[in-house]
Image 1 (cartoon, rainbow, N blue to C red):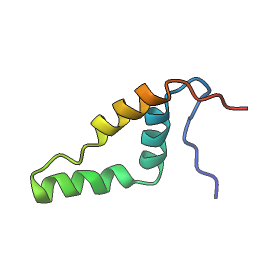
Image 2 (image 1 turned 45 degrees about the vertical axis):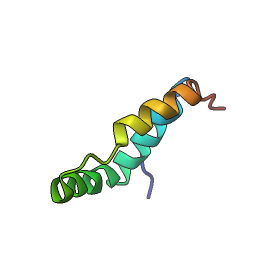
Image 3 (image 1 turned 90 degrees about the vertical axis):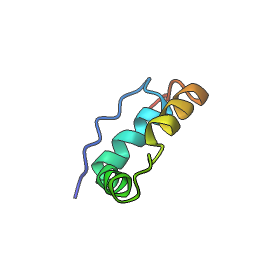
Image 4 (image 1 turned 135 degrees about the horizontal axis):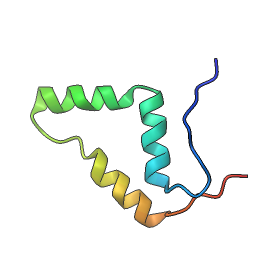
Length: 60
């Protein structure tokens, strides 16, 4: 089974991780956690930090 993530060269690491998490439906689990606990899962903050650390991923 192939999973399309639409990851492109030049994207930040945080964006790539977010697309993979979405393809695996992990973002739905994060939303359920937020709803059940009333706390933020911190996904957006981690995505921004990863994008700052590795702003461009070269895909070959």
